[in-house]
Length: 430
Image (cartoon, rainbow, N blue to C red; front, side, top):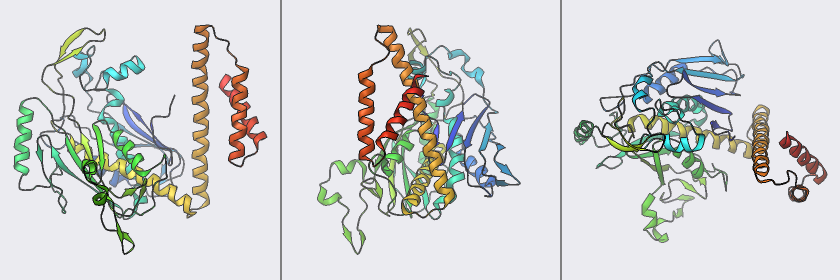
């Protein structure tokens, strides 16, 4: 199976837990030792993510942090750091009436097709509850960003829109139009009265980002940010810089020209060729409405029979305020990964950092071997079902020829690489 729950391969961070399970957790396998554990900062970060106001879910979790390992006398020990946050306000009985129905807009149908099972109690791992772990991870890495400043503003909520403001919004919705804030609340009251929900657009800005972050071509900073943002359940799109306007304007207007040793504009949002330019990184996120609404909808049951569903329980009318801390957390993790990569490229590191990077590569290698073994087992089953011979000598010969060729191209010993590939085949056959 793919390691799809790794939040950061660079720092070895894995998350776990479901919405209605015992707890949400994070495992940081090799944290920096002898660092003061940021307990108060973590609590403050989780409070930002908590429901706020009458348009948020009524599920209020205390989000008490429990450290299972890796901290002694208030400092990290360097051994695996495991943290959990118990789910204390889950009400699984709210979902009993619809346990056999597919909820429109949720992951129920697609996960059922993939795994042939899904957790009807709030969506399990597909629930926004899992984002608690992301916020914790970001807070543990935040100090690496030094003077990088990240901020967000909601530029659209449902049918209402506004413009970005140079000053930080002070209201819970990150709405920059202070004069129009009362109209926003009135609008959300109307949506809530209809038992409906709305999404919107969030603009994210990272200032003081150093130039040179990002690794072409498959580890571009923009690509990794996009993947991080789209891993958040409600994010359906991302637009860097001028966004859609880039499709309409000619190159003579959108090219970021240079004078006095720096760009004179920032149409592309601070990233060119997948690498940061030193300008503000700017992007807009398209956020869909919460799927849990109280109006009757058409659906099917687990046998595919047509049915109708009305979703009860505790849901947000507008969840953008709760998404902002999660979005900023994912950007922190992306930038921390990129900064660590850049340290290695520039040689501005120490022996422990080199060893940490090597440990991560070794871990990735073992995980790839496990994935290859699982895939070989699927191939064996496929052949058995169709009466195909289990071994194909010509196929193995092709593998060895290709391995020797790649070894020569990368300056490695072809004989040693061939021996390694034979071991690889033996492992895959187990």
